Image (cartoon, rainbow, N blue to C red; front, side):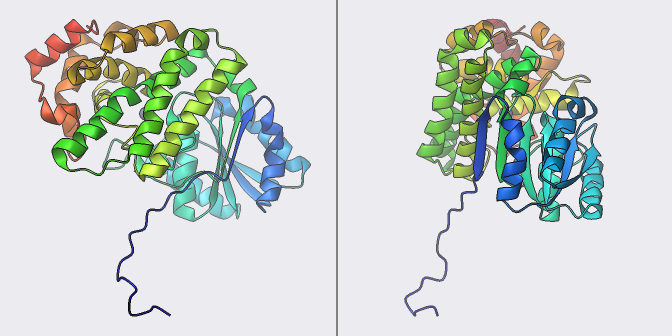
Length: 357
Ligand SMILES: [Zn+2]
């Protein structure tokens, strides 16, 4: 019973983290053990057509080997209607856990469908292209906001470095871009604290920043694309996800460079990969922050990630449009673009100076 001294509201900071994280070659074969340990007997595998071949079918037979029943739900996009269909599939198959097997789409859809149905969620990424693979946030199209929404933290993350090392290197390089972007995203967060009175969590901020620094330092090694360097990236992505969980939002990992990427997603017919766009955005936002933008660009060049509009396959005009509209994509998120409002001329000067156009 509450004593008379019990305060009416106790400030609670809830941090949801994955219970099990497995990184290594062939860890996929441990998935049945994990499901058994967590008491799951019925699973729904959410995967794409190509990722079904890469890992989805294997997941199903691994589970079947231990008598765990699983059904499949094939997703080809990350639209809200697809989430609804997966929710129906989950209910029909009486799944206790949704296992997202794939890249961005399968993971995002499974994560949000799990949150909405109350099922658990296990993340099995086949590429390492962004930090959503271990986070509680999902990016789904068809919602009123073009950025991530709160879903559910994976109860387990199974990162088979063999499968990820075999994926096209472009995805790995994009994952590095997403991690490196934390250099400016954390600066945005600090700025929001100083100028806008936003909450700033030094631990979460430092963790995200450290991940960015480590990946930049390892740029040459990463280019060799070995199982060891993939591991560095996977651990960095886990650290970024953890930083978001500790902060309770995407704040340590998503600032002005992400707003630039979200803006491109809205205005370009065929956007580049999320991490590629964030990397290019980081070069320009670092210049605005007065950071060493050339070091960031050189790291991206070394890794083999795009650093220009041409590299992204995006027209010069779209880069300028994205720069001028980026802050309006999410006005409540205070960043360097809230402080320095770019018009067409200043956006062009920035993009030219940093060699993006
Ligand atoms: Zn990101």
